[in-house]
Each structure stands twice: as C-alpha cells, then as structure tokens.
Length: 98
Image (cartoon, rainbow, N blue to C red; front, side):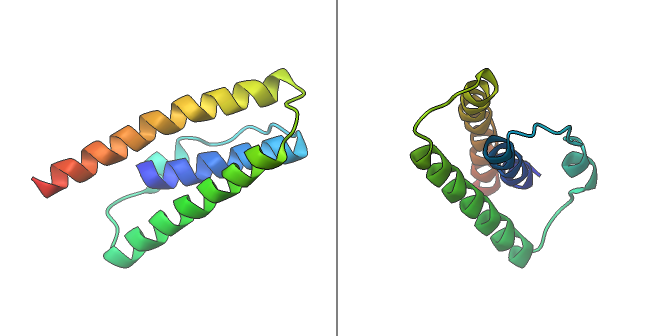
C-alpha cells in the first residue's frame, strides 16, 4: 500500500502542477483496498513508482519558475511526504529480511 500510495501521490501532484487544477482525491482508497500482492504485482508496483518518480524529476527539471504558492507548497510537501513513505517502505523491507 505504501508503494501504491506513493505512485498515486506523485501522479496527482504532477497532474495538478501541469494543469493547475487541484482536485479533491480519495486518499484513503488505496489503504482500504490494497492487500498482499503476488511477486508479479510487486514488480508492477515498483515499476509504477519508478515511472511516477521519473516523471516528477522531468517536471522539476522543466519548471523554470514556481509561480504559485500551491506549486511551491506542493513540491515541499512532496519532498517531505515522499521521504516519510520511502522510510516506511524501507523499514517494511528490512523487517521482511530478518
């Protein structure tokens, strides 16, 4: 769920910055609907997160000016939010290895 949430979050952020439309989202849906995944589903989730991350890197590189408080706040929130969830993912993976 952490990985799926991160990919969804980055996709929503990218769309909002590119379109300037900040629409409400059902942030709890992923947490309510995600359960254990197969190895193939896990690989697909990781791939989805990588793709989302790469699109955000392009977005940041292409954006020469952050013209609104919402854009600036969105990027700052993304950095903090992403760090938190990546820490959760890392902790979960480390506990699986033990």
